[in-house]
Amino acid sequence: MNAAAPTFLMPSLLKSSCFLLLTALTARAAPVNASLRPGLDLNGQWHRIVDPYDTGYYDYRLQPYDAAAQPSGGFFLDRRPQAETDLIEYSFDASPLLAVPGDWNSQDERLLYYEGTVWYRRLFDYTPSGANSRVFLWFGAANYEADVYLNGHKLGHHVGGFTPFAFEATALLQPSGNSLVVRVNNQRRRAGVPTVMTDWWNYGGLTRDVRLVEAPATFIADCAIHLASGARDRIAVRVRLDGAQPVQKITITIPELSLTAGSTTGADGVAAIELAAPGLALWSPDRPKLYTVTVAAETDGLTDEIGFRTIAVRGHDILLNGQPLFLRGICLHEENPLRGGRAFSPADATLLLGWARELNCNFVRLAHYPHNEHMARLADKLGLLLWEEIPVYWAITWDDPDTLANARNQLAELIGRDQNRASVIVWSVANETPVGEARTRFLRTLIDDARSRDGTRLVSAAMEVRTDPADADHKIVDDPLGEFTDLQSFNEYVGWYDGLPEKIARVRWTISRDKPVIISEFGADAVQGMHGGPNTRFSEEYQEQVYRLTLPMLDKIPQFRGCTPWILCDFRSPRRVLPQIQDGWNRKGLIGENGQRKKAFDVLKAYYAGHLGVPEPRGSTTTDQR
Ligand code: GCU
Image 1 (tube, rainbow, N blue to C red):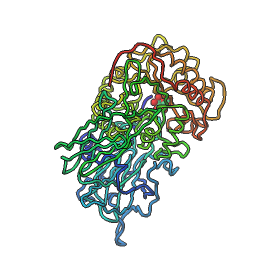
Image 2 (cartoon, rainbow, N blue to C red; image 1 turned 120 degrees about the horizontal axis):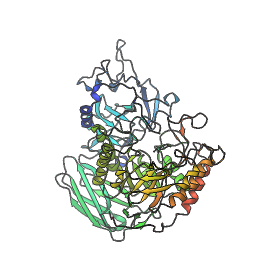
Image 3 (cartoon, helix red, strand yellow; image 1 turned 90 degrees about the vertical axis):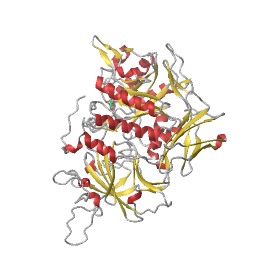
Image 4 (cartoon, protein in one colour; image 1 turned 60 degrees about the horizontal axis):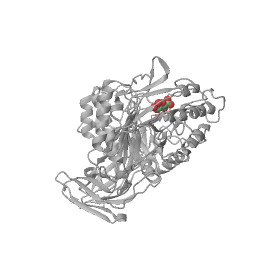
């Protein structure tokens, strides 16, 4: 799969020194659990200006207006004519509206293919409830780059379309008539994460919730709550405060277990606390037990619903709470096919995870980027295990330090958001990336980051399979990256991109590492309602045949411990152009864009019904305890 660089011209300032400068403008410490804190919901209808030439950002010499001390122009100033002589060539008040949260592509068919800049503007009034409160403008996500302005002043810049960020606005907030302007640009970039070629729709916009969040002058900026290493009845909590009063008493309370423990943060605002938790019920798909946990500092506090579980690998086995586990999974994109567009709401999460449950799944791979927070929180409640991933996808610019910094930042923001979600058991750092030294170095950095930020989960990537040049039926999994991951997880498309379904039963595997095998993708396209023979491409029968033959083939792999077939439902992709068949949709879903199940849906559902119990041990075992 080769990628053509887009022709979009950007001035030289987008070179590395600029990325470092931009990181200086990136989000500082923000209150943890921002989506649960008091403040103001800024969702709703926002005025928007579609600006393909970035007229509102650059002057005709391609100099950004917001780089000037006294900007001479720029839509972020949100000016209105004061006199008949005033020349102002834009007006948010007179501009159309876009719903937030939501992508712009599915809200206006003229914007379906639009990639570029859209300006959003929202007016609001807000008076902080506390005298010394700090206020932050928090975004669940904005694809791909966002410049945020309040009352004509720049708060910050964020890169990465799928993770939360926030900027402090305390000094600029007015009691009324605040003008919040956001420039969102979803232009694809060769050095971006993801890069220019993906197999999903590049939905742009303020795709998730926007809130003004109020927090005390010193607040909890980070908080990790999980079982202590190697224990099932001890809880470890790490808290970090941000603000002028870093040294504070911290109290952890779990009322249901009558547990309380305390400590004091150091000068760095950090405290690590361990508490014994006799009688703790562990979280699992069969019993997704959540406890109300309160973390109280002297000036701030948070309450969250937390599940406690261990996840580890031992030889070929994946162990949940010490018990071998078979992962009955499915992949899904963050898209609601029935409504069209990016999924963003609790209702979207209920729909998509509900379909996965109907399939008898206990595991979902959220591909290929961090999905919204509602997914992980609902998975905690439903008892669905999750694989979460950052969009290091296909041919990334491995040697570009800015690309690496960008990927590391996206991983850090994802882990920062979901580190307390019991449902999340795997951090994935990449999908189908070409074997090579620079690439493996790049991905090892991410794997090390994931392990150092959160040592309680498995780390992996969706790797590729190579074919024995001497034997097309002999598949080899020996990606050097597999040395550093906890799972041997790889994508295989025997029977679709590689031969016909009849080839599947002939395939032999050589898997170089003695680790649990997870098939992170397999599948075939089928148009819902289109019928033919088992070799009729795009028919339901072809897809059904691929599932019928693949599952027993995988069962023969001794280390096989689960799979996430590609994919739960059809999804939009600009790469899929076959008329009357694809029409801009990847058709590998088990559910059509109309919500109708395809025949293969029942094949997988029945197969998983046969795997509801604990998998019988197969193949050799060695120890590796987390
Ligand atoms: C790839 C890739 C997916 C893609 C799928 C397909 O393996 O990871 O993002 O959509 O194959 O070709 O359908």
